[in-house]
Length: 459
Image (cartoon, rainbow, N blue to C red):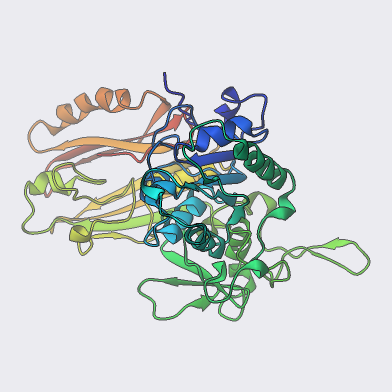
């Protein structure tokens, strides 16, 4: 049976003798060859699959997609990328996009890449210079390139001595973190400091210029300096989190936000921090803002089918993807962007997942919904730290509209719970019951999840 890991505490069961499960290797079919020879690495599973982030015959496009579906983890400290061979080291590979996804999913990790093999199959005519040029693109993204490459071989899947050498290089790098690439090592113009950073569910994008963090929304015409002039010290807390999530983006001497800890000339530690220690690991827009109020709205389009059903599609309905995206959050499909609004750019379950990933036990304390006569809906949800010690990982909803809606809504609840076998501690947050403009009965339940982060809930 395939080993599938639902949370990173179960890493050790795959490789108890090697490491604490915080250094992983991902990529193509040569991934197990390197893993077997390493003393520090762990694979997410023994069978190649999207869930395990490695598979035979795959390239950058496949790996980027697989990573995009992976839950966020702050437990992984090192990611070794073994990719490129199956794409013949194509200059069209979206390496920048792959690294953006990897940094989103593994925000605390450092990254290195293994150079692939050639001289066999479709790579017979590949030259060492082409390989070097390809992996220089990883280096430009702030990724350490492992030497030597697997190299020119007749079959990379055999017991090659070079795998021992590569594994030793990786183990040395992981145990001596100072060996990772520094921003000053990057070439001008294509350095990681020009990289645009996107965070899950965050409406802002970020980049570094002149060692300062800048931020902007797509709708804004200019970048705002978070580190300096554009933000007051109390609102610069996101700088700390961005530095923590992207440790190679700025130099060690880069300016920190005002109010962070500094060391005085006499060696004593001083601090005028504007946030508490327990809040420092929260995503930027959440720091210091608990409890959080999320708000949104949607309006049923005139030409949509099944208007009554669409009116109580608080998250998303299957037939056409329309709904309020109240739970799963963005991105909103292009066809519904003019009808749906998430005021904070996030849904309830997105925020719960981010809080859990940051070590906070969250709770959905209230939900308010207003359905208007023009078939528009306004909603508000409050999220706070849990007072009962349980981390509520998600919210699910089921309901019906029209005749006999009360009983039909109630009948759906057992099926809703059965679809989440890892969920427990189900608690009703809201019993929504209205008669106008149409009869709607809708139940909202929160739950804990033994598998770690929840999957985004559907309607």
